[in-house]
Length: 313
Image (cartoon, rainbow, N blue to C red; front, side, top):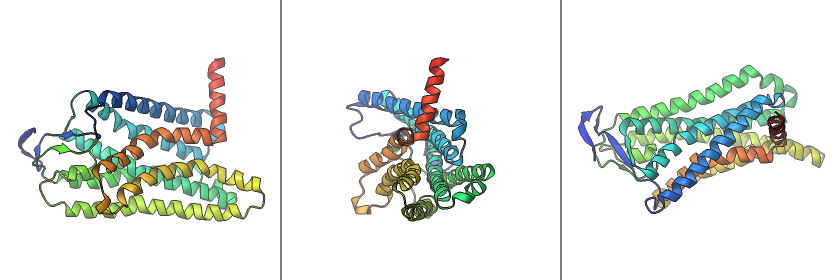
């Protein structure tokens, strides 16, 4: 364990990330798998951003928020996977500053995604339930403000947790039983009472996770009610098809988050928590562009145009 004189309430200069189960046995295989996941995540999301910018038909609020989500997914994956790849091949040591930085970035991007998914659900609600006023409500200025608010709220939430974590003394051991510096895993190493941190985590989870989830639920209840009142089957399919991709992304993201945070404490397993975190922070960012490109006819059409343009050029 690396130790120095106590500075800013801590006596450790860094931590050891223990990583995934059986990491040491198959670390070369894991390196290749996560490298491919990272390449697919960056490529897929970068393609979504490029397509939504190049095709003027996709200059709508729905695709503006989708490009925000794609940029967030690239950032989310980049805050975790490169560090994992280093851990697979070399040192699992991460400095104290590096750990707190990763903790802050991971938290802020996770919170921002919760808000962005809620905003995207609200966009679909206005488009389907109030189509005549859609252009007025979801104008460019409003979209910019909503997106900026989502990012600001996510980063402010992370700032609260990070500042509180920095006030705690960490006297050892310095081994984090995780593949990243996640707040609960880091707090377990504090050599003082962390009850205040737990209360703040619970309170912020209500604001950052539960409220956006309730907004998504509210939006889709009204969307479903409106769609069922459409007389033609074709009209119902066309209306709800615009929500299908978003609904799948929400299910994947919130399914993993709810599995991790809502199950009884008696059933908690640190290894299961690692896998849940891995799914919503590493795997889901890779799947999101695939879902939107495969399930959305407009995105597929725009992709074909871009590919044809590149071929002819």
